[in-house]
Image: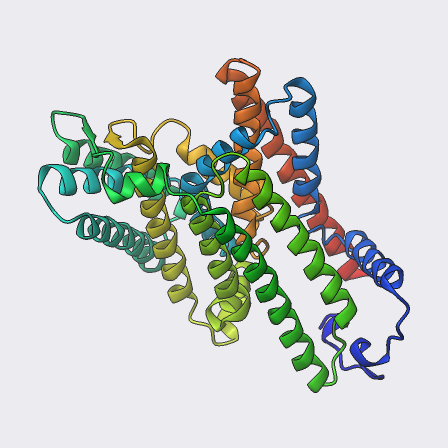
Length: 417
């Protein structure tokens, strides 16, 4: 039981903290953050610091990097791989891995292209079929893992090869199928942007939702006589979030604005974060990732959690492949190939999801893919070879794993103390 979960021996911070002003709230927040860092709970701090450094370096080397035009392109490039990375986060949380997400995404793209263009299916039907196929693939992985005890590394490595072959078979002799530019999918992935007023309204709504969630949590903890976050701290964080979102919306609106596809990806991250942190299933996912045996003894149906994690990962991989096909306006033999697998897994790990299981959040996918795409965009603007991008991304990935390993050791030593 952590200190925040122990019953309070005094009234909650919401009621007892005097009106000492914003400086006291900031000081208390800084003190709390320092205590978390000392205990090895770094959260998203390392990746945020890394992202700031990356943006600073590339902006100095090329002032176009932080221009509205480039940032709009960067956000639109994040959605497809970011969606795949979100599924990787779920699998990593239970301590497993899926190496086949690239092949599954390519197969989904091929199904949509063949079904919609060559077979004449309605686009919605083609997308639904592709998502169902992704879910069934995940169910197959979960069954093999639970029934036969095969390592997820081996299962998904076989899936990487097998479903790549299925993708090539679905595409047939043509090898490449163009998706009409006037189709809803291509319009969604390339040309749909929020009007400025709607972007600002979405920013206000997001800040209001943030405040509502935290105020509701503070009230529940106060009613249970537990320490809770003060209303002043919640108000300060809400104002900072609102200013940040309005600033980003204003800056992106100087170019084409906030892309609907990117906004949909962010909403998907928020929904997944709610599922992982506010539902029984989400708590079970973290429990299984922390210790599957302890979770089993606590009455959690561990095999079902593994099955749901694999299904969700493969379904999100299929969704990411569909978005990538819309972005490219085509599906071909290279869909889901190249560095799709590597970037999706690297994004999840760089964003803060632990390879050891049980640690991370849905926002790991968002932060990680922004880092990777920032590196890619910056190096492209500098006209550097793609080999440099792989080297830099690999270096950042190693650093992220080192930070995760060191924070894990720090938490273990504090736990023994």
